[in-house]
Image (cartoon, rainbow, N blue to C red; front, side):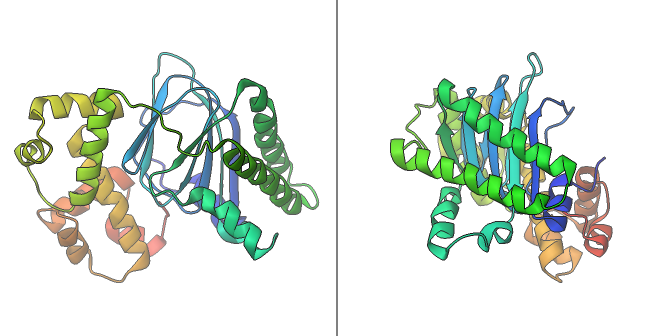
Length: 287
């Protein structure tokens, strides 16, 4: 299992991480978090994307803007190639490049707690895709002055996004979700609010007024995860944050996150993160 994520390592080293036209496939697409902000751009495939309490059915040209600290997961179909570009960056990477007023406007693109969607037209996509390719090319070369060029290119991309958002008011457009997606949004909202509690499927069913068998089927069909696996993944991601940012004992973290015993917590953490909680805290592997 990969422990060091390229995203966090790159953000800590440079302040930015970028990929363009990525088409690699993973056996498992995990629920995860990471540092920084993300601009994700969907090029080809059949996929939906969970960000916080929201589910986005992706079409080519869709762009998602969100904070990496918000739990998220892509759920692509393996039946067709899955192609995407994305750039992650820290606020400090760009903050000194512009006025405070401009910086605040660009950062406002990432304010929505469950992500924001912008849809680019067929004519606009070439320009957007060119930004990602230029960023990736410059980052790979690491030639003289490349950090300055990367910042300039990223600012250009964000300005283009901001102009698009202001011009057409297309941040988070009103897209009518399907019946099953709307129910999964309700399930996600409940789970994200109560994931530290040991609620039963019957309690979830009662709270949402949905049949418990329908809940299980619908959630797995839309997200690719069982409810139980999603809850454990969310607890582990929260545990990573607590291990990195607090000195609380592992036993107390385990109790706060709803694990029955510290042993159960340690086993689950090692299964999902690849190392024990103690080792994770000691070496600060990242999300």
